[in-house]
Amino acid sequence: MMPSLKYQKGETVMGRWPGSSLYYEVKVLGFDLKSQLYTVIYKDGTELELREQDLKSTSGFQARSRSRSRSPGRRRSRSRSPGRTTRRSSSRTAAAVAAAAITDNAASSRRETRLRDVEVTLSPLQPTKTPENNGNNRHEKNEDKLKVENNTANKINESEKKVEAEPEKIQGRYNLRRRKDDGDAKSDEAKVEHPEEKEAKKAAGATFATPLDFGGKIGAYFWLLFLPAWVLFLVLHVNQEDPSLATFPPPLPPLDVFWDAQALSFIILWILFQALLYVTPVGKLSEGMPLRSGERLKYRTNGFFAIVVSAVAVAAAVHYGVDLTYIYSHFLQLATGSFLISFVLSIFLYVYSRYAAPEQLALGGNSGNVVYDFFKGHELNPRIKNFDLKFFCEMRPGLIGWCLINFAMALAEMKKQGLDAPSNSMILVNLFQLLYVVDGLWNEEAILTTMDLMHDGFGFMLAFGDLVWVPFTYTMQAYYLVSHPSPLSVPALTAIVILKLVGFYIFRKSNSEKNAFRRNPSDPKLSYLKTIPTATGKSLLVSGWWGMVRHPNYLGDLLMALAWSLPCGFSHLLPWYYMIYFIILLVHRDSRDMVECRRKYGLAWDEYCRTVRYRIIPHVY
Ligand SMILES: NC(=O)C1=CN([C@@H]2O[C@H](COP(=O)(O)OP(=O)(O)OC[C@H]3O[C@@H](n4cnc5c(N)ncnc54)[C@H](OP(=O)(O)O)[C@@H]3O)[C@@H](O)[C@H]2O)C=CC1
Ligand SMILES: CC(C)CCC[C@@H](C)[C@H]1CC=C2C3=C(CC[C@@]21C)[C@@]1(C)CC[C@H](O)C(C)(C)[C@@H]1CC3
Image (cartoon, rainbow, N blue to C red; front, top):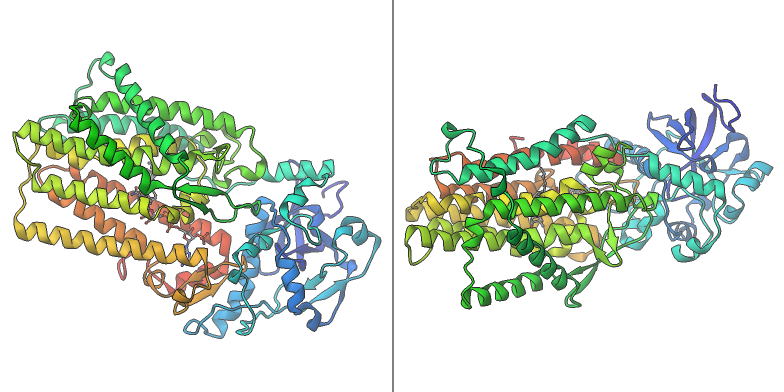
């Protein structure tokens, strides 16, 4: 029993469908005092959390005509409502709707046909104007108030315009909060909120999170210690004459060797220089994907400009006698300096996130455990004014720094081996990785539809990953080649170049296809693609690259990684480190994404997985 609550455990009530005014019959499973949310279960077994405002007693509903619910005008006004969300509830409810839509899909074996335009046909009931309804939802008088059966038949209707055709409407689909009849998000914000509603909103934001990754709370402690230790191990190991497992563990130098104030100041200067380029008003202002609040952040995507200016600056520095082999000889000290910066940044990010509104927190980094949230990232998009810290760190200092370090290694190789030009292997590694980074910066907008930008909070994992892991471990191949020459025959070189180009083609095409589709699903250039509708208003691609495997971009990336290691030969395991790490990282990311997409899209995701059976490698995995 749940004392003094409006709805009791076991009671059957009507629960609102996110982004609309449709109500399903649900059974109350429980009530969370902290979040003030009811856990309810649908007839198809889907559980979700709803606020009291989104529940109504069944007595307040009556059957109403089908034609009214299908009025296009009405649908229009609904989907234009400003989007605000409660956390878990929105996605779980979406899953429930997806479940219904896809059940019918599967039954009518429409997989082979074009599934882009969908309408969920419901059997609506209209609530009578009971005092309860009027009291709770006065603002909804003009909206459809519909009751639907959970096991309602849903069908694909080719004639209806799908929600995705107007991306700005997507936000309305996630709305489980009070909705105003019209007006934009800003006017919404300006209205005074009831204190109770404020509390519930706070609680909803603060409590709900996705399941814990990376071994949970204990895992977070482990990774916090292991990741820096692993970088240290790699840096010390690669510096040895014989970097084989026989010399494991590498000898630890005295503590004072780690610290170099000059190295730290170079890192700070580099980050400030990149920050300056980032805020330079050159290049496009791109829109991110809609957030849970319905808001879309703007990002200055001038990464290509940044790398070109950086290259010119580095070339000028070399021309005026700056010895870049300093990077090779002070690698450990530079890594230590970067680590310190990433650690201080992570502390700042965590403290800063404590002042963020609940809807600005990352679902995956909101466990309530300080260490876990510090590691995983508490706030989704921490910004100082318009300066987006996550976007900047992920795309600039570390990524461009990676190319700078590789270049320095080529110079160091020439110096150490007494060469007039870098070796073929060194040139390949430099060019391949430069292409990867330049491509990422050229297509910088595409990063806005990746997991890191959309779902992961910005905390130690990414700050350390961006500022330490990328520049100081992704450069292992180039570092290795400085003192371990690996001559390449012409056929081997040709084969490696072909492998790289094939990988790059798959990687770029698949990433661009998904990005273009997410940005404008009705792009005529994508009209040949088949899709599966989901109840969130977004669809899933089931043909093209994303019909081949579930992560074609990972396949391309892995082929490229192979091409980066091959020039280093097979004498040591160390240059293969990236390949091994990358397989683990991408397999884990794929699993994380599966969980996240299953949560978001429910049975529509299962249907996608049935249609596209392999995850990364066709017919293998
Ligand atoms: N070099 C490196 O260290 C690393 C490189 N990468 C690369 O970065 C790139 C981005 O990777 P990552 O962010 O992990 O993942 P993705 O770019 O693959 O993003 C996954 C998201 O894409 C959407 N999606 C999945 N399936 C479909 C589909 N069938 N149709 C439409 N949308 C779909 C989903 O988001 P939604 O539906 O919400 O839009 C899903 O959450 C990849 O190329 C990867 O290889 C990644 C990690 C490290
Ligand atoms: C420290 C942890 C064990 C792992 C940290 C992972 C991060 C290093 C990576 C997570 C996703 C990344 C991406 C790129 C770099 C590595 C990190 C930050 C990326 C920017 C590289 C360039 C590509 O073109 C890209 C697609 C833009 C990549 C996006 C993901």
